[in-house]
Length: 291
Picture (cartoon, rainbow, N blue to C red):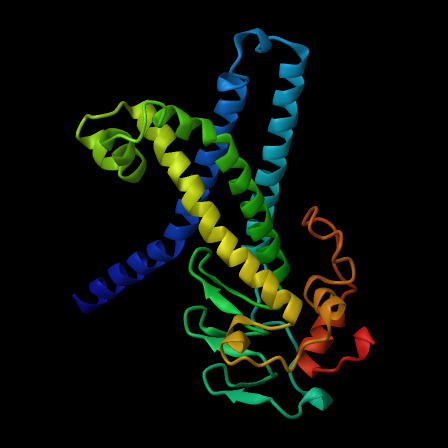
């Protein structure tokens, strides 16, 4: 009985770990589908413009822009999940060991400064920032670029989707701020279950609300991590107000995003750094590669 309960608990735990990723994927593709519908069907609003050349080009540009952002979100998220930020595969020891190194009794190895053990991932993580519950993985040295790029395109995509959904809010509030319109925006699920609105109205209201709330949340995350990037800090170091590893603005950008930091935002396929430099600094603490 105990063995069966343990197996059930492990399966539930594994399901809960993948649930945020599945939910995020569903929301991203739902928002993309809704915005595509707005572009192809609802806009432009004027009937005399719907079949013009301007209308066709307008739709092409909007579709290319939104699927460029969607592609970057998915690709960066996939690379983030596939790139392990842990100490596995990294040589720790030798002449690089010095002040600030600690011994992890769980992993049974010496770890460099800024490295800490994650009890969710069950391993030590190089320059651990935090454990991301939305992806179910730690944000560390090796995958920080993909995490930040994903946040950038999620922020720009949600901003775009919020602006495109402005017409939805206008339609809902066209008769004024009534109890019905306010409830539809605040609690669309209850309005749908009680039969007060159609499934179509619920879908538009729910996705429009999701865009606004998601934009506010992602904005907070993105600008906070941009602030940390410029200061050369991790979230853990920000709590303690320490900046012992700051290399200056340009040095921090190169250390985190690589020597091609100005191009790596465009696509995850663009190589971001000379192999080995970042790992050398992260493990030894030497500033030599960036001087």
